[in-house]
Length: 470
Image (cartoon, rainbow, N blue to C red):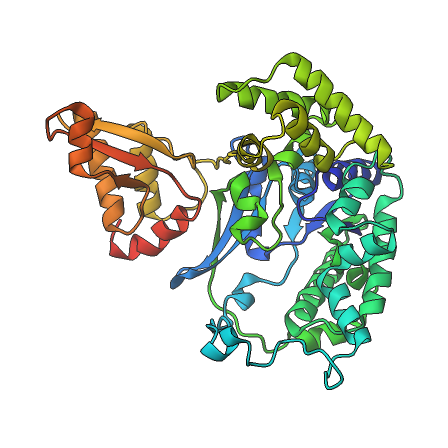
């Protein structure tokens, strides 16, 4: 039982080592079983993360779920391990055919009384509150189990504790056993207050494990979120789980792979299991031995590309400062906090504006994944992809300006594609005002100036708009 953080390079590296030691004959991964139909693509070298497994209802494409994977995601590395060693891999979470059959909770807007503060708060305080201190503590443990463990260990935040103790751990031996034990204690403290949906998810995963055992597999590796690991290890009778899963409504769903981006993995995009700094974690995955000096060198290159002063001596001084700060704080090695402080002090001369650039370009990053041509698509998607290749318009999430000369056949075709997508409500390109385009070239109406930027949700929109034709 391998309890992991959904996007953690240290977990991914330790998991690879643990799988090599265990030599499983099958790998079960937390994820929608509808994805098993496209799991074979994980052995294709042209499926390059970050990518997302998209599961949607063909009759209602807006009802969809995304399951993102980065190169440093433990689940992705588990799937890659299975592909490299020619052993079966399966997704084992509750089917999205069940989850997407449920009506979404209606969105509620704050009333005037809420904004004035007259309405009752979700958690009351004072003598008449129905929630006592113990109840509030249990809610905090369930909402943030990692934060609870970090607080017990004397850390100010869960992110810092998890990164130092798990993600940057040098000796992974016994790590997953420790995670399992710690999460079992946290769940015991929080009590059995898991909602129905979470109980059904864990029941389904346990049923998948039982089914795998019945099929004769003896070395089963289960890769799941750390919170679920104790519930999957301590299994109740099968009839109890069967009762939890009986009578659940299902709908027809389909699955495919779509490109994803590091920016979409970031927390501030609203993705629930997102990361504050996916670019930093990608750096830890690809260059663990150069995590400090390599990071500061990358920051210096970025600043130089923006015509800002960042000498090699600043990289040396910044590295020394980061290592000194880590030593003063009793940490094994510099983390992102120490690196930020040293970069701002040495390379940015204390200024905040260059740090905002480093935040966007380096800590988050603009990496975009790639999927093979053979993944399932609707005809409209295939047509758009074919035209993108033919017209040499690469879909990238970085905004750029496109100057089209409508006297040229290629540029006319590009303009036509962008206009057609806009008519479908897919704003890959936004035309600038005609007078701006004219001024840009000092006369002539045969120029169009576009701002083009691809977004990862566009494939889902293409699926939705396919009802209008192919």
